[in-house]
Structures are given as structure tokens and as C-alpha cells.
Image 1 (cartoon, rainbow, N blue to C red):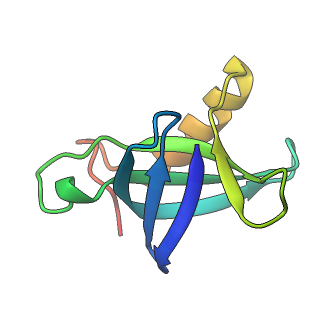
Image 2 (cartoon, rainbow, N blue to C red):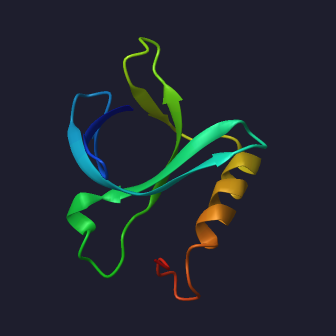
Image 3 (tube, rainbow, N blue to C red):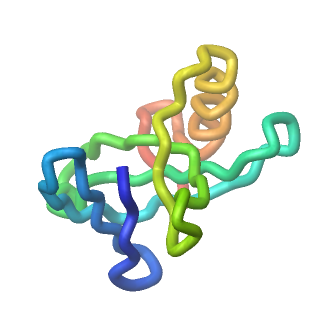
Length: 98
């Protein structure tokens, strides 16, 4: 998926059909073990909801070197690591600890 920055914490994702959806950045982190950067995002329209659908992606430079792409995490061990990082920021009820 292509990533376009709107402002520092808003991201527009464009899917393979050209549909755009606005997301808010929750946080990013780097993994020394995998040598990659990751981002957690959620749909902007859920910002004031009691719960949000958090998505995680690998941040990768795109082939044209004119921006970044968000790449799905496909490796199970890598996904477990990303999920563990997210869980350190969630309380027992699954709420984000700011």
C-alpha cells in the first residue's frame, strides 16, 4: 500500500484499486533484530470511538525512492514480535496507555 503524509500523524493509504482511506498514526518503532521500521495505525474515523482497529505494517522505501510504502507483516515470528511491542502499550483492558 502506498503511504502519503497529510500532516505529522495523519496518513492516507491508497489500496491497489486506488481507494483512499485516512488513518492516524499511533506510533512507530525500529527493530534491531529484524532491521526494519514498523508503524501502528488506526482509521481516523474511529478516533473518538471506545475501541479502534489497530493495524501494523513494515515501513519500507518505495521502489521509486520518492516516498514510503507500508508492507504487510507476513512472517509469524516477526508478527509475534510486533504484537508483543503493541501489548507493552496496552493495559489489561486493551486500552492504549498514553
